[in-house]
Length: 97
Image (cartoon, rainbow, N blue to C red; front, side):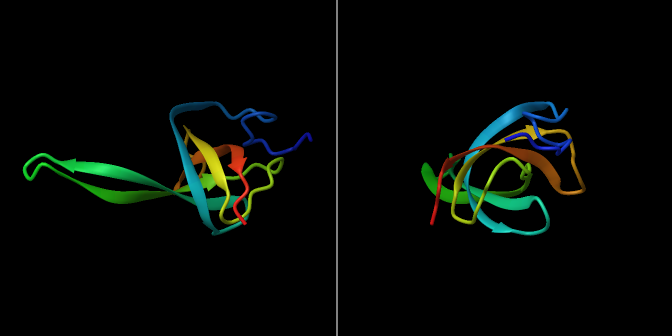
């Protein structure tokens, strides 16, 4: 399915580079914007311990992808698309609900 979104990495002119992350869509904030969260482990060398933390970012959702809350998605870093968005959804890995 072709999309007319200029910020689509497949069909538009948006170049992607940098970090690639797989995470879960928590919620939708605005039009074409999703909040993606992924867990990570942080090592504290002083106490020789590891604790769990999570990171949340805003990601642009192109018009050609159908993304819902609870889906596992792959996102990649890109140029700043707005004040808070610098990631774009590349593909949907697994449907959530």
